Length: 101
Image 1 (cartoon, helix red, strand yellow):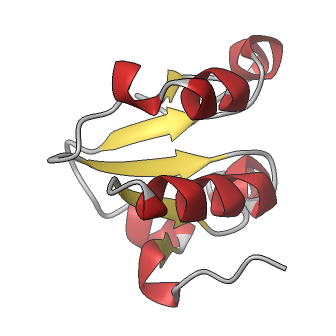
Image 2 (spheres, helix red, strand yellow; image 1 turned 180 degrees about the horizontal axis):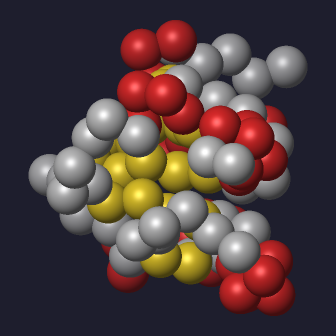
Image 3 (cartoon, one colour; image 1 turned 180 degrees about the vertical axis):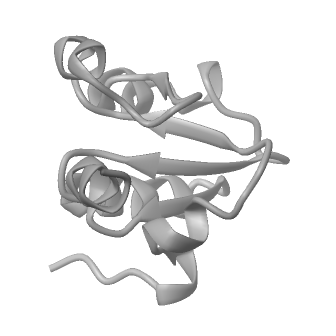
């Protein structure tokens, strides 16, 4: 099991309070087009992990999510180890949908 520091995670309620953030949806383009968090950009997981430097800057904070927050948590751990400032959205898109009905 991959361990992640709780400081590198955020609840949807806290995310909703933030303004002007960089949020990345790592789900497939099809899922992204079916619905996504407002202002999120889509960078599918495999693209992001194969060449993170093509998409991310090490001096910018990114909020990353998937469907349930499990895959994005692993992605955040890996990106953090590479020196990126990344925060996982706990519960992912499904939790965001529930909180924003």
